[in-house]
Length: 156
Image 1 (cartoon, helix red, strand yellow):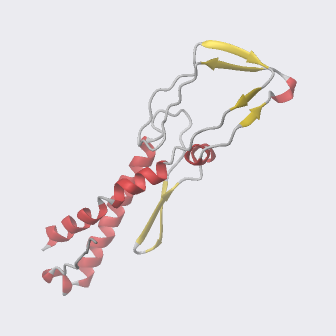
Image 2 (spheres, rainbow, N blue to C red; image 1 turned 90 degrees about the vertical axis):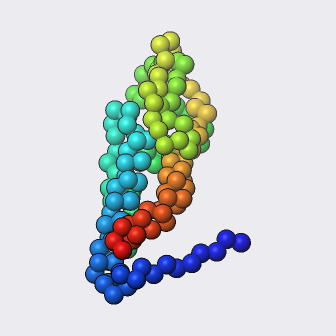
């Protein structure tokens, strides 16, 4: 079983204001970097959601969005029927290629397809969940400890 040990920086123990400033600055910088990762997942989108950083308390940062399409893709969708609105006909291109793939912190060009199809309705197989939030969390869980340690070491 892996263990951990607390490293108390001798010069910072006696200066709580300096230590608080290091923690605050590191949290803010890390949250901004996480925000950039979320933005990367939509960089090729036409209608990009806004990602915000909230600070509910001095030692917490929450990066998120209220973008409905982003949430739908992140969580995935079940299979469903698509019908035209106002009794018109559906028009779409094939073969479709998504701009994003599951668990990848990226966004590509995608394609709507060049072959046009007209239909009175289709059965959509659903969308695989992208799980960007999990991929980004896992990435930063592995980095944040070293980032804080470097910030502390640079002040000693």
